[in-house]
Image (cartoon, rainbow, N blue to C red):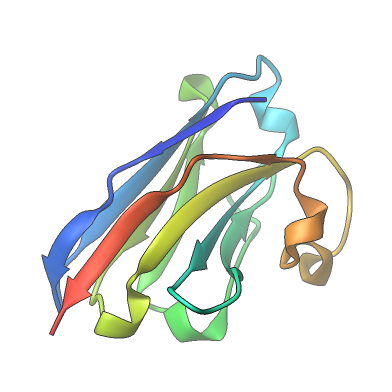
Length: 126
């Protein structure tokens, strides 16, 4: 599975961005899709994930109520709508795909994902 992320950019605090990630897989709907981010000097961290149907999502606490993950299986695309952005959201954002079955906690770990996009930079100015 090849993943192509886009939509990053520079935005002021309080603003919004929508990230997109398009997958090459014909069986896109069978993958759990996740978003991770990595800020300079920090480890990659889980942001959100969505299972095969749009109803099953989870988020890291720091983005709950501000970010929304969604997917369009007909377009092989997963989205991350980011509202009320804060300077601490500044990072490179990566989308990832997992073909495995597991718990929500499992999908919050980078090791659950086999395929990664190239990353898109999000910079939030104060």
